[in-house]
Image (cartoon, rainbow, N blue to C red; front, side, top):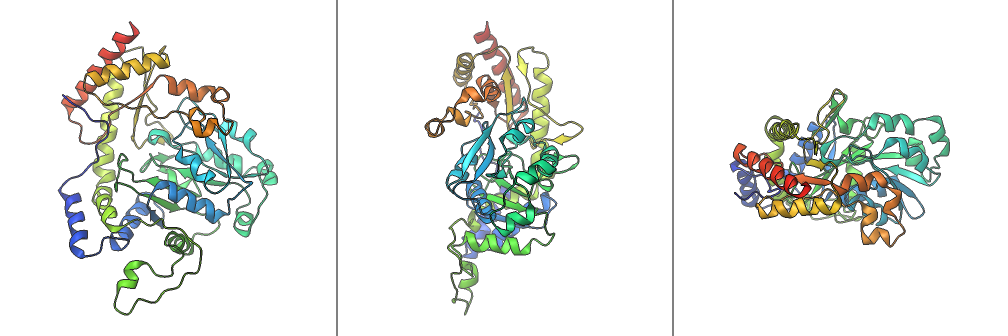
Length: 404
């Protein structure tokens, strides 16, 4: 049996949406993108979402809108994929890394010490689909101490009066906190629709707007749309209509839009996401949990509890009393058994681009501890029960061979 790590989901409905887009004669940004935006906002129980060509672009767009630039600091977790910090670097800001907790997410208790008068944004990351403690983070950022430290550089920042919460929810479409979509706790939330995500458009992402200063988010949506299309007053679809050729460029924007042909791939998925795809993911994660309870070497990832509901994007199994080298050997054993696994993630301070900028993994001991014995197992709706059993038995066999 051969088990891939994370193949993209597709069925006849996905194929039909793509064919519909092709046959329409319009494949770049148009009605499919708008429909995907509406579905994304609906899942988040908010009114406005904007699709982009990647989650990285989406984060950059929000940071730019908030006025983040050279000399500013953005607090990010040390334990995340590099894109979280690169989005800040691209705008000239300095990523300030904070260690994680045992749930892999940003340790909120360490954020306060990292806040300075240069701090403009906090970017928590919902690793594996497990939502961060946004309620606790909001409580901290709304405190008198933090508000007094905050230095606003423009009218948007002045209106908020505290650092922005930009959720990197690349993994967590559908995650909940205190019974509500986690996106209702952040000021802005960015999802990823990359090829391995719970809903995929091959490449892509989306911004969900929850700006607390006003409930009317239409103007912010229009601004993001304009800036994502080179600052052009009409998108290509509008220009293509009879007599609609005339346009203007009113802002030095970016090229960050999502095309319809990609939105079509995600559109059919997101319509069945909550009722079908997410439920299957959670059922598989529960099945893994029940299996690993019998083994004292298995540290299972956080799952649903009275406060949080996971989006079950990844299954981050940790092997107790296992060194980094042993973990790597276990992965090799699994490869020999034709089970593709992964590691999420190599902490950013261990990567060359950040080491060269002075980041040191020794300052983030929990991040290294979580990483050193973590193995991400296949988790996707297409997995059959036989495949799940084969994965679990292969993990047991490989772990016990190496640890013995």
